[in-house]
Image (cartoon, rainbow, N blue to C red; front, side):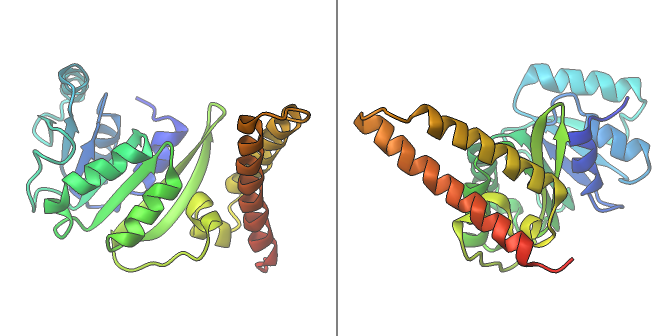
Amino acid sequence: MKLSKRLELVASFVPEGSRIADVGTDHGYIPIELVKRGLCPSAVAMDIGKGPLERAREHIREQGLEEKIEARLSDGLSALKPGEADTVVIAGMGGELVIHILEAGRHMWESVKEFVLSPQSELDKVRKYLEENGFAIQKEAMVVDEGKYYTVMLVKRGVMQYGSQAEYQYGRLLIQGKDPVLSAFLKKESERLRGILTGLEGQDTEGAAAARIDLKEQLSWIQEAYMQMESIPN
């Protein structure tokens, strides 16, 4: 079993020795690999779907890890009890769903040491939610996997305060670290947005005017992120 670049990055964010709970485990690849490598003593592989959970169980059986990994039917964190996991992984879903899972799983906030999050959309909303609810992002990284860009965050209880939409959108730690994958993403995103803006030239509808305003605002955030990265010494 070989993890994808995305899942390998997610797995690398899990502190060694953690008992993990993997929310939306799907095939169970992350808990299986972490336990196989001796990095985690035990794991709970959770999914809301019976089909994905059965696939995870099958893979766990194939690896002979039934005594160390429990496959558990769960809507988010609802079936997890305080004290059962040190680290919770929530990856491979949209930002709104990540927020929903965290919000519905408040009973786990104080007992879990770290959350490893990898939202696939609406990262700005996730970062704002974390800030407003007493979480602090400790580490972030980006990776390109099969042409798509993914962000992974290590989150703990704490305090953080971001200063601009650019930081919510693209990640203060990624900007401050002059992350090369973020830099490539900003370049690609800028080109994409400028292409759309060019395509709207000459269109005088109300919708086109609103779209132009939105696109220019997004481009301003990219420019701000670029300027911050360039101002940081190597």
